[in-house]
Picture 1 (cartoon, one colour):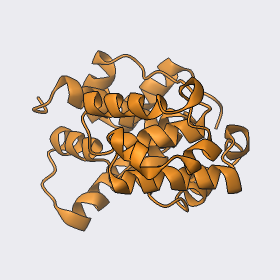
Picture 2 (cartoon, one colour):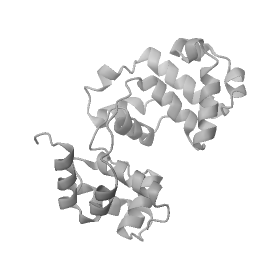
Picture 3 (cartoon, helix red, strand yellow):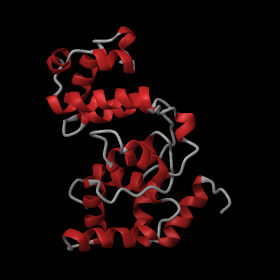
Picture 4 (tube, rainbow, N blue to C red):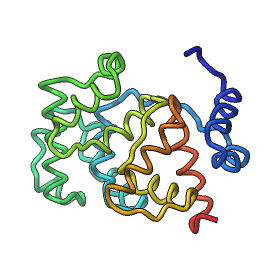
Length: 209
């Protein structure tokens, strides 16, 4: 498929799914920014899990401050005493996960240039080998660091809540996820772009109005 500009993508999505029209009309086209430090991004993702933005930022800053130039090089992170990481605010489990990421970076590598050559599923398969890194974490990496346009994170709670409100869905469990996947098929090959619209729309409309 030939590359489309932003306006062409917007018109394509509206044609594919009329429910998206008010979102696309109101919300600016999602920005496309790449973060090439996969290692640092994964560390931050693990630290931020199940925390408020403020708490995550505070603990992340404390962890970085333990290392020269505020950067936890893999070899240094592997050797960092657990007690010091825990004192920065990390749980024991998250400490294990960070050390697993550092170990993987040293033994397997996770250079952006190498990973960028792979398909979405290949990157997911590669990085979910790391203890503590699940599919959702890598999907967020694909969307926000690699700027992949056709990733759909069916397990993301924000996406689930937004789609339930926008489409008036009342299913639960497996039927609910199947409904989400069915709707998202209409957005290909721009499912990740729609996800960004949905996150922004739900943030602007917490009640789904």
